[in-house]
Image (cartoon, rainbow over the protein chains, first blue to last red):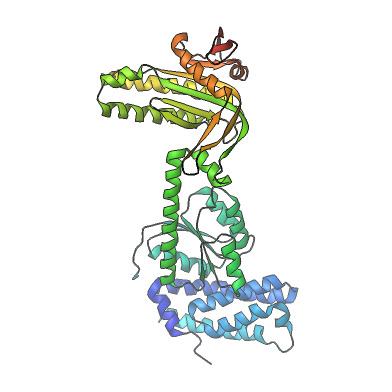
Length: 114
Length: 347
């Protein structure tokens, strides 16, 4: 396993956008992400493939922005596999994404105040 | 914070993801640009209709209206189709990129957007837009807005079609002696002001000035773009022209300069309109009896002692409250039969 947050990506983001701004942006992500994860689960339950793919896509995109590479990789697998792929009995990715998000949130929370 | 500031541009960022939207806007603001944000395609189109933008940064995956739909709408809108769009997306698969470019996107930046790449692509797109705007401005200056739009929409083709419209001829009375009595720069100055005023009056009524020769001009009402009531538009423009000349003369009197007087002829009917000339040099014009008649009416203003003369067809379409005076039948050169001529009141 690599680091939860890739430090080089995160530092580069701070350099280009400004440290204070990135701290606010992390705050925005921590506010928005639970809703997107909720969307993913709701889409899975309701059988809405388009909504499922879009939620996975957004989470992947934000994960890449902050350097949450494992998180983004899982989200990308979900985006590509789609609803049917995620429902397969041997597809633990939705649960894995939840677990990885908990680590990402904690790491980002620590980094934004560092 | 180490950004180099580019010439500021007005940019629209459309992205449904709040983190992406804020970050992209921040990067652009740090480069010195003014940024407006939209959280889906529908709102992006609303903002585009409200105010002018130099460029749009467009996400593809958006609820309510996707980026693909936005690209289609922009391409179909003559007012908006020239605004460059840079697609910012993390969509998987090259076919998405190809589809965006086919729909008219200027460029494609994968997300997360690299700030250095963003600055370079943005600079290139804005520069291309600046050149296109410059080119359009040149066409506009030498061709009139209506003709420029017509060429932009339908492409350029020599050849004509039948249209119904009104033709106006106007010139300055006694211009030759005026030219001889004053320094050349005064004459050019006079013509520039005069043409600015006349273009305002004609353009304001939906007419198109297609010829300027010395102190004379020819204007078309109803082509290349159709007008509901070309006769009224032409006569309204004529009266406004006289009013502007009256104000212009008040200025000239105050400066001790000679006043000018103009004569205007308007005729209405069928004509052949189109681009004539060669592939290298062409002009939009109308030909036919109506054009000749309008020119003759304008010449007849000298003898008739009225500033605006119109034909029967034009008069028949005017508002009845406008008290037009019948001057009777007048023999017009080039016409076998004398025609009814009417004078339009100036005030």
